[in-house]
Length: 320
Image (cartoon, rainbow, N blue to C red):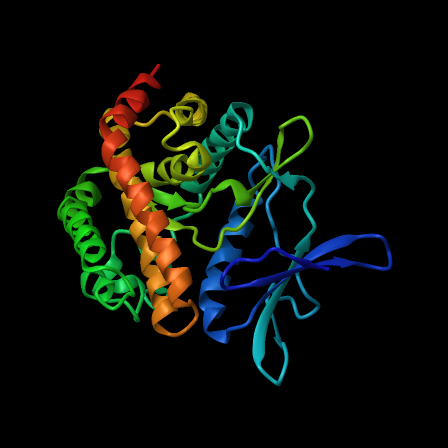
């Protein structure tokens, strides 16, 4: 049975004859091998920790490897990994209770990731470089400002995004020089965490982008997605406060890290935008899909610009 997969992978549920259930993940690109091995190494390192939730720990194949080469159709090569099918469901609605649970789990995960032996990310795995290194993360989009001019957008929209990007990039060097860094998940949105009926977290998924970056980034990514359906309504703050306060109770960040949350949210947003621009330039996104995405991006960036001071004030209030 096919399951929801990410941009780079396909995932199936596999029911075995002995009653066991597995998740089969297939990457249709052999060039992802180094990246997948890096991810498998991180998952193996996490397995020694007694974490209160599950994650997709790969099962060893008969060859002794966790990754298996295969043909996925028309003779095209792919890479497969098998893991247990994890219990729980993706939340269809973000509530303060679920946001609080997600914040606590993310903090526990970040503590465990900080204890993983330091591993240098191979330079050829561009998407695992820090989100702030836009010039090196995507070979199709080495210059974001220029790439924006290739999109089917009005000149006013292009200029607005270029101005926001330029202001954002001007402050990145200082953030990387002054803020703590560690190994992170970097993608804990609502689709990458499973709950049971009592709102307890059962599993964390998708370590595809796990890599070393600024520590405050993990909390910032979660804060950018959990309240997204409420942004602009005034009701987003109960989700933001529930998630942020719960995270801080388990893993306190310092004042400078909390003040950097808006910048971290922009950093993750521009990294995601760069990825989609790259897909558009090689024909994997239509003009209409790209225009819709940019409209959504501008809406999110406008919210962040108008609410930045309020967001920082809320973040500082989470300190014990």
